[in-house]
Image 1 (cartoon, rainbow, N blue to C red):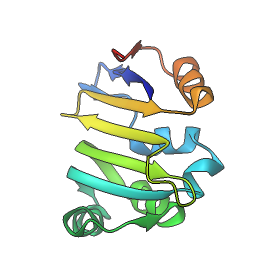
Image 2 (cartoon, one colour; image 1 turned 120 degrees about the vertical axis):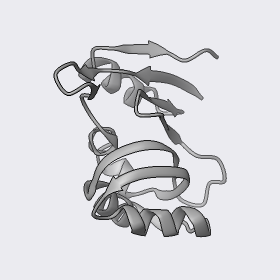
Image 3 (tube, rainbow, N blue to C red; image 1 turned 180 degrees about the horizontal axis):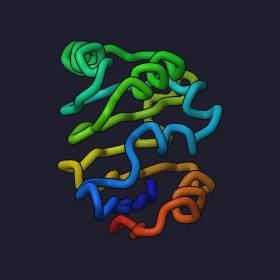
Image 4 (cartoon, rainbow, N blue to C red; image 1 turned 90 degrees about the vertical axis):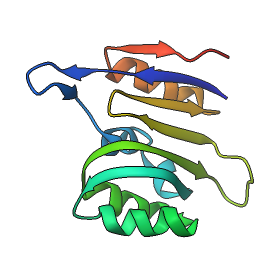
Length: 128
């Protein structure tokens, strides 16, 4: 999978200018059609405890549940989120939150990578 690293900053607040929900919204309906796994999570927000349980147990959740839980987060510090279509065993997208400093997005959907490059300013290709 090809990928990009996104580091758009909000200089006034000293943090990223976006969060996981913004990436999920750019995936459009494909995010809700996917099954999701969550690993190595560190986050804050009203739904953080629910996502911690899902991460700790290795539970696979629907796209609708994933989106609802992500919408309830204030900040994603670390974590890996993988989306799978149908019964595929390889993810079509992998999002990695990197210490509150970047989100790396790898995907077999090159149109998603193009949308990310258009939407965000500080985007670099990940090494192949």
